[in-house]
Image 1 (cartoon, rainbow, N blue to C red):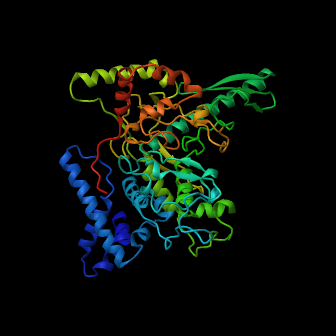
Image 2 (cartoon, one colour):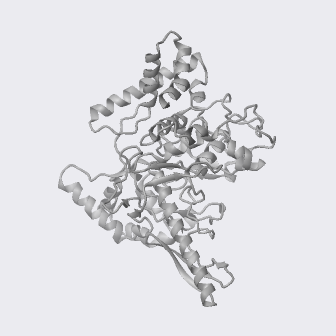
Length: 494
């Protein structure tokens, strides 16, 4: 059945170019499309090169097909949620389909932009955004598909549409491993909720307030005090919203899920509105015209729910970053080992926690209308390399983050706070893959890892000062260690 669906989605479009092709030829074409976004990483460099050339050849061919039938590939991604609900798409097929959406260049014929603004807007207009990019890959490219962006790719968010001084600059983050990050946050949120519920129960039984430590996976978030009436005093919470929900995405830690982030990015960067946002978001986000086309561009149903699900599946199944001990003999290996020790000694690991334990490898995407939950296995469905499951069913995730907000001092403070986070408050960015995600910090102001370290302040001041006190030779080991935090090697064609 899935084979038939791909024949319907892609084979018909291939027939526009060559209507005399046989059924077998159409099936081969759809199989080629399935293989254009690689999931399994070849072990041999020659195989990586061959795969990169195949992908490049496919992209070149699409230019000709799009010249004959503009928008054909976008239309081919218009999968309906009901097909996914009935398991007509495997996890691998959803990954491939979501990857095509991620790499597509959107046009006004798809719904790009809106009727009430310029085609492109460098400085965003409030919650409506730009648009400021034609494709996700316009900004997420460094180090491979779903990578970080350069300083020129910064998004200038939440401004007046005209002046840079009104915006908040955000450098595109690397996306590898974000499915694992969301799953860790889901588990931590469940543990924090259990602390709250137990405190409420204990307070009711004791007849007086009960103060409990908020802690999950070894990370402390301060304290809560449960009152006898079932309410909670949240004044002692640290680095977390008062709803006790860790939001692992966004530089300030303001987005709880990949789906929230993906829909928001489609909207503000491309002007592409999901059917869910059209139904539920306010006019300040989606436009003043109301109805099925609130941005007034003449295009309804710009992004359907099935496309959102496929895009989330692709992002959730991106590979996990790696640690690569340097070669070249014992010299660099010794520096690496010393740098790993310095990372602990200087106190970097206090916030950039090297390891968090993930209890369950199942990534679950709830259905918005009460239908079946989409479940993906992060240990087997994802792109390689994946997380490794231990004998007890858990996974040791080398993420280098505590998923907590921290005050970073005046040097990194912005002109204003955002969505409940203070002007100088940011969630600890995961350091896995950091060597392939320059520039650094929330706005890309740091061109090197050393620049980023030296700009730390606030809660990280002591760690920064310990590093700054060393001469250049003394700083070298930590730089070598951080340079070992990479993505798996892939060959990429432009």
